[in-house]
Length: 188
Image (tube, rainbow, N blue to C red):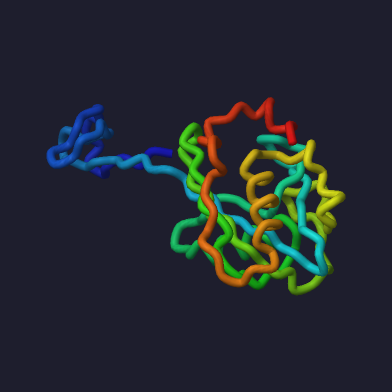
């Protein structure tokens, strides 16, 4: 949603003084609208060797599995957002144990911050945006039914460091630009 200036003046695309990109600018008051990327926050949550996954009840990718994640809200830290998303999607309480990864998905103007987390209780249930939730041992993760490539990246990278306390956060795997076609996400 674009917020417009209170002056109600005409809006046009222009490169504002001191900028190098075209923006929406109000001719009357000089208001500049900056349209910036969305931040997604989430967590790979583990309990006794099992990973919390949610089957999506909303589009995109309804019916596919994901980690609890979603858009960061205004006036919320990324940590608070990841904890909120786990409560909303899986009625789960987590303790974040570190930043797992920062993914770039320029095709849809997203930056994803994915945390590593401990599930505080296995008493989880589907929230409003989930059809069901489950705790999956690594060998039972529904790899072919994961909603997004970044979910696959996070789960694989989590497995690489699950016994390591301190590590540098991951980024997109080599060759993965985030400019993917969702039809190809069923590949392992």
